[in-house]
Image (cartoon, rainbow, N blue to C red):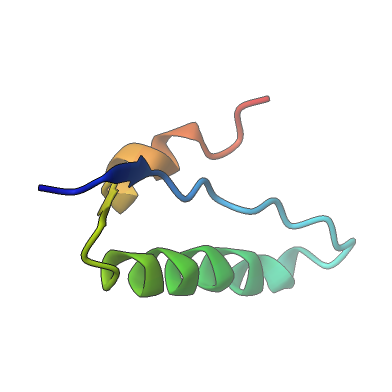
Length: 56
């Protein structure tokens, strides 16, 4: 049974270049995937966590 739960929320593209959105999304994805490999963590699914994208 996992000892801790964590959610990786999407990063915000703070660049003035909207084409850099892939970088912020990719960074969030990478962190989520690495944390999912930690056996003592329960990582909230991407679809659940990314539902907060664009929210304040």
